[in-house]
Length: 100
Image (cartoon, rainbow, N blue to C red; front, side, top):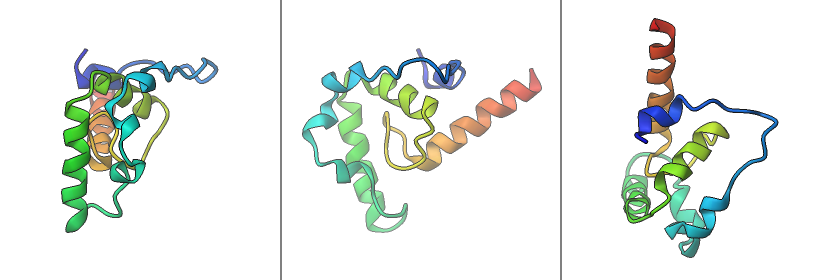
């Protein structure tokens, strides 16, 4: 599954939220504040990159990203992507749906 196909996954609002992936996540042993920097410039850029480096070592990175997209997580680093990257991904998917 690639990141673009994750955005296309349908969301069923009445379905139970599956968070089983969290038990296998690398970030469970990290300070949660690492993944929620204040801002996206200056020192926050270093923090974002550090959070992404944790994600890159994680076996459940794609499941995390899918969960964040399906549940509207607007803040923080999820599945190796920061807020701006997830917004761009959603916009691109919306454009593709509109052009289809």
